[in-house]
Amino acid sequence: MTSDTSSGGRGSEPLRRIPAHRLSAAVARTAAKEGWEPAQALIERHWDLYASRSPQHLLAAIRALPGEAFIERPTMLVAAKFLQHVLAGGDPSHFIQGEWMDVATTGGNTGLMDTLGVLTGKTAALRTDGDLVGAAQVARVAAAELDNASEAEQSEVQVSLPHYRIQWARSLELGEASGADREYERAYDLSMATGQSTVARRAAAQLAWFYAERGRLRTAESWLARARAEKAINARYDAVIFLTEALIHIDRLDFAAAGRDLGRTRGPQEGEYWSAVLWVESMSARTAAIATVVESDVAESVGRVGPTVANGGAHGRYLRAARARLSALRRPPGDNTAIPEVSTTDRIIAAASEQAQGEHRKALALAAPAMQPSEPPRTHAAALLISAAARMVLGQTARAVSLFEQAKALIDTERIFTSYDWVPDKLLHALARKGNTTLDVPDPLESTRQQAARDLTRRETEVLVQLMTHKTMAEIADDLFISPNTLKSTTRRLYRKIGASTRQDAIDFAHNASGR
Image (cartoon, rainbow, N blue to C red; front, side):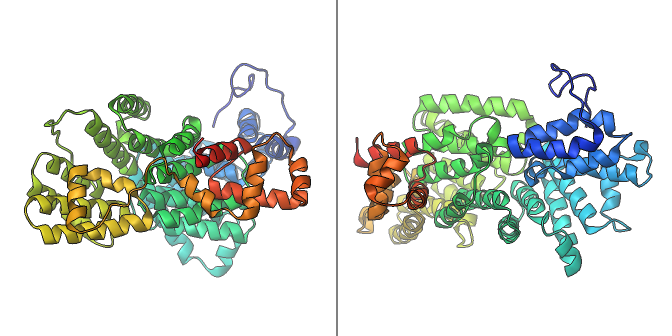
């Protein structure tokens, strides 16, 4: 962490020096009024001034930052450890971040807070460097350190644990390691128990994405509702909420709503979800023209982050799936580019490609590993459909129909209707006819918003109608003979049901649901 003592954080405005003993109070005020980013920038601008002459005041300023700062900038944890090292009489020149991290996690005199803080900073740093496997390994070490600690030690760090667990979960998720869902859930539970609403919202939102990406849409919707129930501080933190809603809307064939959600995720706010955003955009693409635009976005993003980050862990999986989807829209029939088999999703993509080329036995072999019930619904349903189509062509009608019925039951349960995209319409309808059933795929115009409209209570419907007028909220409350607080709580429930964030969102929903 460095700073120019003669300039502000952007190098253009003079530094207005804050006395060291007042810095922590200034940081706290700035965080309360403007958010953690300006507060953190304030510390950076004073780093060179006070790191050596007043480390105790600089450390107090770091400790005045809200929890969000340590989620977004885990390196602040390392900065705090450096200052503690200096205050303990250590030589600043001998503080080497990587080495100190390793020493701090091998036992000795370091406390649990120090150990977990350093490990959390390290796992975040490894993610930034593109070492997703290493990041996941460190996250597991951190979780093990906590599990091995005494109840008294765990109690002392419980306020910080939600922040740490979110970082561990993200490392496990991006590193394609197991346990991310458990860490997110623990982060949520601890946040609720310690009254940290903002952290609870983030943990619930990230867990909702985790489930939606795997096709467990009902569970994802449950966690989205929990996220929405907590207070929103900064729209930037809600990018994962909009991304999750976009994917669910795509799976339910509501592409207009998905487009609006995706529009809220693009830009700096997408953060570590950049590759997931590109994958969801590829899922929403329905024409070769749109596919060309998204392919350009993929190329730009890969150039920005570099091949090491782009090809690793979940980032690589998302990008391979996005490219395969986009290529399928743009390639002429007969063009069969080989797809590397790295994950189950890659095998599904390769199986669909082989099937498109008439290599049905190869398609069966590739899809076989994803046929297990333990597979996430998204890949399981795809494997069942591809296998059903292949066996139908090979003349194994009874087995084909059985597999199709299994896939249909799974798709109908989670309502992941985009799964049908894996098989040509002609084969799908043939399978349905042989099974004496219908596909029950909703018309995209019959959107989830229309379904939500049918689920509204009478009072929520009345409020929605009033919101479409030019009346103020006070006037609406008077017209409905309810108190402003009742109107506020009813509106909040209404927004949650229809996925709205603003009054204009609610108006758009009403127009779409009525077909106008």
